Length: 111
Length: 117
Image 1: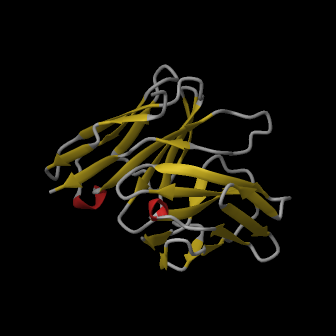
Image 2: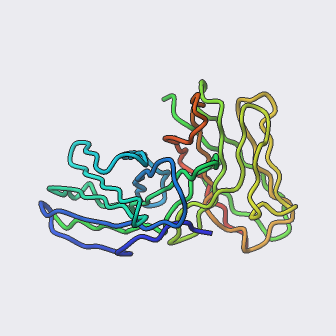
């Protein structure tokens, strides 16, 4: 079963705008990761934030983590048409060897 | 290209047939995972290998599913007596092992899309 829920399920924005997507999870985690998936392809790792971190940046990506609320957000700034994809959060739970993925947010960036 | 590769990329089979998928992980990675993804959903964990040892299996992995990693390198996932509900994308991922034992970034292959008619 999916461990995380993402919000919104779909998001459509104009090129240049910022995109924010949220993830909620249920259990204690070691870290939380965000992945991107282009249609019909494999997943690509974007960024990882550890449970003792609150915010992390990588290029145009900014991730926040609130372990008290069991939630995370991914912000993509100055979006591009090439950012069009599905974005998934994945949690590395304490004591587990695999990742638990959310249901994903489908982002469409309109040129 | 030294990424994770999967073969075949697409497989169409008739219900009741057996199918086998192959995954070649990044060579220095000793952890290998199989996930299943259905349309509109995130990947769901199936099974995990540490070198050649299969250490964990999801309850999603019914008796009709079997996975091997005979020499700790490539892995195969076999589905026997396929059912229409097996139609999905089957994803393989690999990662190195860290001293902490925690799960970090996983590197995914392009997936094998299975269609059972």
